[in-house]
Amino acid sequence: MQRLEKFYEGKAKVLYSTDDPDLVIQYFKDEATAFDGKKKGIIEAKGILNNKISSRIFKYLESKGVKTHFVEMPSEREMVVKRLRIVPIEVVVRNIAAGSLSKRMGVEEGTPLKETILELYYKSDALGDPMINEYHVKAFGLAEADELRRIEAEALKVNKLLSEFFDERGIILVDFKLEFGVHKGEILLGDEVTPDGCRLWDKTTREKMDKDRFRRDLGKVEEAYREVLRKVME
Ligand code: UDP
Image 1 (cartoon, rainbow, N blue to C red):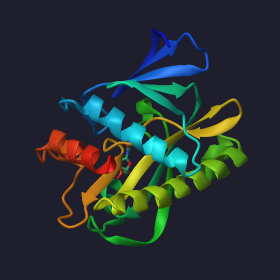
Image 2 (image 1 turned 120 degrees about the horizontal axis):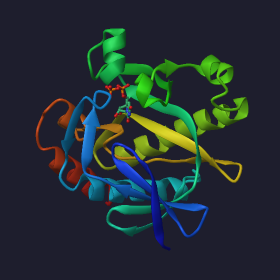
Image 3 (image 1 turned 120 degrees about the vertical axis):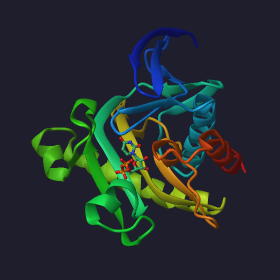
Image 4 (image 1 turned 90 degrees about the vertical axis):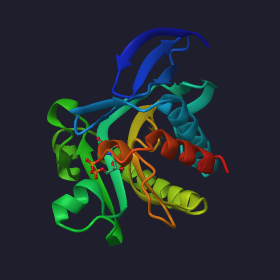
């Protein structure tokens, strides 16, 4: 597999085309951003840690019947993935109130939810990813009705699988964000599943093990990501 030209650079990853038109290489950087890019920094070795964490999680999800874009991890910072037509929707699943939900609803972080919450956001950096619902998805043609149904069902299935996976490793999956895309007519889970886009709390101490350590200047960011990698490899 040959890495050809860079065709997209995001906040945490670079995408390269390859000699296979169906495959793309995701290159994981150490750059971290928060608050719509207003806060910037470097988390040492984050690219390597996130690539390894996400590869492990994608493999686990595949083994449980979730279709993902993951193909292989040829090097520490590279992941070979299937080329996707990205659906411009970010799906957030929440098990416990935190972050923007706590603010919006005026509840303390850590408040349990009676039911899992699924939220949709329009993927647009320029607009700051506004929250939308299924009517917006239909009205603006962001996805077909059956695609959205599939995406929501997959996101809830991923929540069940990963909540259990992390629980067995002493970690609470508080909330997380997923992105999906279409490859050869099929909906696949795309992007990455890492502490950049998941809230992960230690089950006994409730200490944060995710990007909130960077967002809120809590220190020991790299250490936390390293600990997540160690636990997901168990
Ligand atoms: N999230 C993300 N990218 C975004 C917004 C949110 O990965 O652009 C993740 C975030 O890490 C958290 C979950 O989605 O695990 C819910 O985030 P929330 O809406 O609480 O927003 P935040 O507090 O991160 O601004």
